[in-house]
Amino acid sequence: MAMRVNDSKLLEIVELISEQGFSGMAEAVQILLNEAMLVERTRHLQAQPYERSPLRQDYANGFKAKRLKTQLGELSLNVPQVREANFYPSFLDKGIRSERALRLALAEMYVQGVSTRKVNAVLQELCGLEISSTEVSRAAKLLDEELLSWKQRALDKYHYIFLDARYEKVRESGCVIDCALLIAYGINEQGKREILGLSVSLSESEVHWRNFLESLTSRGLNGIKMIASDAHSGLKAALRAVFPSVPWQRCQFHLQQNAQAYVTKRDRKSEVAGSIRAIFDAENREEAERILKQTVAKYEKEMPQLATWMQENIAEGLTVFSFPSSHRRRLRTSNIAERVNQEIRRRTRVARIFPNVASCERLAGAIVMEISEQWLLNTLYLNVAE
Image (cartoon, rainbow, N blue to C red; front, top):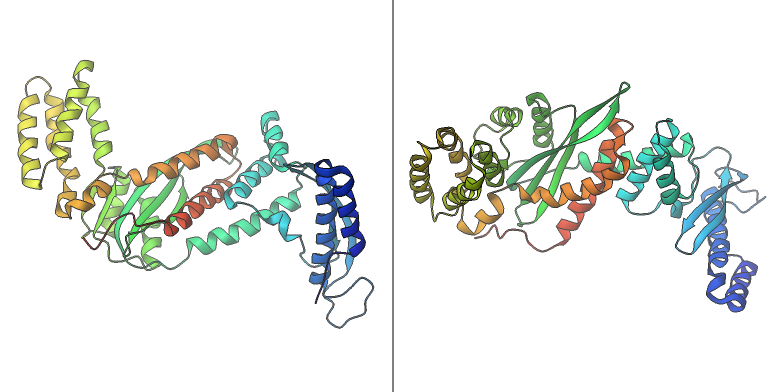
């Protein structure tokens, strides 16, 4: 059905801008948006107002006032309604997915009566309007459909996998608990990085990690040459169960941090860190093991706990020596997750405490989806052909 904005409305817009210049832009945009929503409703109904048509899908049912904050100022919109079908102007649903998820998290807090004055203020600033439970449910449904589609998409061969977790506060059964965000990253056959999946769990226990890893394999994940992660006991147990034959690389960055707990003198911390870096920077595994042996002997008398810890743990960070030297810088740590964690932290700092697990997963999912999509558009992360 061919539709266009009413000529009289266009004339009104032109006159406003002509008479008031930039000061009339807000009102002009307001008129244009109100008219565009009418056009969209007519297309949705597949019939003009009062038109008798066998193609008609529904009937117009008045308007609902809505105030929208924009860079031009606050706009007063008249959102067209219909009697039965699920209609909502598309431009009001558009925007960056993660921003919509953040607004929705705050809106859920508001509707459920758990928001503070600060949250209400942020909600008004972000949304510029009062939120009803119906609008929250509708917006949640749309975002959840996007997230579910992304979480269930088919996977293929990925040379290297990185696993990481972070915690967010969530209300559950009237209590505030720490929920674990389990995230999997991969480097595909083209050498591009991608976020493979995300799961919100009550902890990092083996059962939660195992369920998450099994969900990845059920989607087709295969061809893994190495997995890198921290040494959480639940994750290690899950890896042994799901990927028993895949080499595991313990994150060297976390190893260096863990070692500091065994350094008894503050002024020796940088020295110990340098000794461990020398092991990791060796030319090959044989050289790394030689330096490790020397380092253990060096600290055996003055810091025996450190020496024992190094002997038992440092070798877990040497798996990367089995792979091309040009790959090691990217594979030796799980730092691929750092930018993602920073972005999640930046957004979740606004919400502080999520009203439920679904809200937390929705926002985190929207963020990682956007980052993963951008990564796939970027240049190679690793030259896997080398």
